[in-house]
Image (cartoon, rainbow, N blue to C red):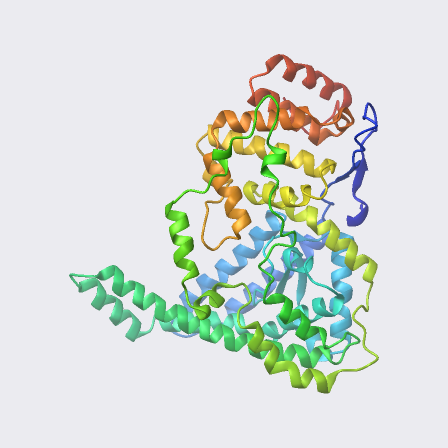
Length: 482
């Protein structure tokens, strides 16, 4: 099995201009461990059956359905390769977990399955049945292992305190209570403003859940700190972690996208109208969102109330700090290497999951500082190819997000840019962008496949056929079919 940080292939250096030194490394998603996949799925199914068998009461069937939905959701995560079971990345994560559990024996009976998730958003979550997901979109923004250890302790605390299952039970008991059902019937019989009444009723549940959620966060923080102080990790990093989470929704590479630099060609010049800001429904919504109260905006953040959470822990952190503790306990070099690899893994997983607009977004952010990176060049081309095919087949909404006031401004700029493009624009972009790249990239299978597709999209059948023949000679057993 190939280690995560060494899964690169060197592209042959033929015919490359001396004035353009190409970055000849190329990222490939590493192979997951099928054995670990089977082991974790078996444990997940076992816990699901145990949870269901222990249910009782009048709302049993509703609880059973929600437990089943959770199990199916986790199974789908494994099936779509969202869960990382690759040996090196998973082995490193388990070393962090082992350090925590070894110092806190009360955690051993939990039988938690802590795994990296390939998803981009900066979060971690305890599913409630033993599965804990540490999104690589969070991990690659952290500063050290002690912060990562606090995140793990926090999610273990949610599991230990049974927060997820308690939330499910409270929700079912609320929605199927006599009082709630009576209110629903009353609204149903109303002649006017049914939607407004339903919205108010829904909001009451939402705010109640949000209140409990914030209480649970405080409880998990408190217990996490108790466990963290027993390890060799630096407890002070719990505060720096929470401070970081307060702004974690900002992109790692908060750069203006180089749209004009990337998509302007002598044969097909960039048009300013593609990026010209217009008064749209979206922009109106965005302006309105800016007028929301700070409290309401904070509730939309991935990690709300971080300043309050820091204040609650500050005194105990000072009390618990041990001068012999360390910010890095397991392996700083591997921590940094995984963060670097996860830059590419997020891009790759977004692309494979048909979240093409976000894959392109992160690619362009990195391309700003690495314009000769072979992987980033290839992914730019294949993302545009996918957008071309989606627009051609009237399925653009399946691969590209729509602008939203809750998105980062730079991401919205890209989304509006995509919405303004015509089919010929997309065809020209991939064709001219890939055509201008050094010939040395033709030694890479993914680049050559993207180049061939761009020839077809821009109606260049003779060029397409030429490169198909090149592909067949270079990759007689290749993964692409033309």
